[in-house]
Length: 113
Image 1 (cartoon, rainbow, N blue to C red):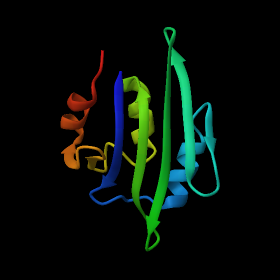
Image 2: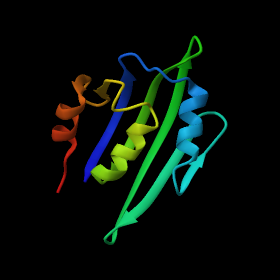
Image 3: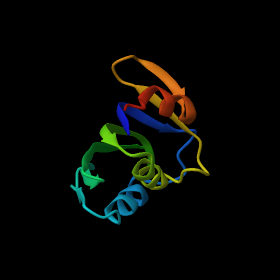
Image 4: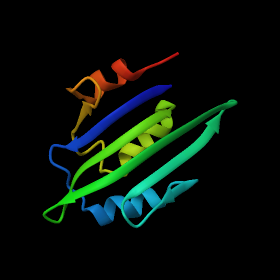
């Protein structure tokens, strides 16, 4: 299970805000609002998980995605795919620590039992 509060940046993102929004809306149990805020939740083997997020755009391109919550790695992979991952390299800024990490470092830092 991953637990996190991070800003997600593409290097650079290749999708627009609208493309990311459409991909998010296709996820099961996704609640997506027109302002770009969303909640995605579910459960696996009796464990509930939830991710709250928000899309931000700048100059017709997705600029960053704020993500907060916890989920299993499989669901995290599905979420990242909405932002053209793995073909787009991603950078994760941990909000509380103020540090930036690549995907592999992020996963190690955010893994909880």
